[in-house]
Image (tube, rainbow, N blue to C red):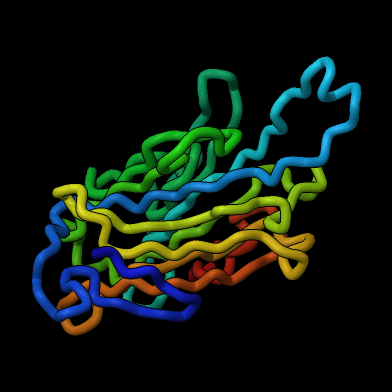
Length: 224
């Protein structure tokens, strides 16, 4: 049975709560899900219908070395539309660079509303094949243009992050729903995976930030 985590709680990712090695970490899926709190609609909205508000929550993973830093920030490339993309093919997995050069960690897609059941975004990691240079993976969630659109985590409910092993077994889940304490908070360091004595641990964090750009958080984890 999966463990429901509380903020700050840490578990061994391979073992269950009885200490048994039952999970296959050859491929671990980190799934993110959320719902947008429904606003009270007036008579006209009910009569004519209202469009579901778009909340673009983005999942980001930072691969950190033994110093807790991102060693490879990738490179800058020019996309087909002429846009300059930085951090490409480095140790930052995000919407503009979904696949790590090693092939051992990738982001599957981008859901802009949180509609539907199950995971809205997933980051998949081949933990058993991840190079020893990587000692920690930090998972961040941001609301794209949250400040510009007056959107924040107090408006998001049923948010969760969970870890699923290669055989589809849910290992652990950390859930939260927005409240007034999250007003103005547009980013969250949701959880982390880290090595300890040769084993992978999973820790629920839930650390909130007012910025809606993961770059502001990334700066705390770079050598520059």
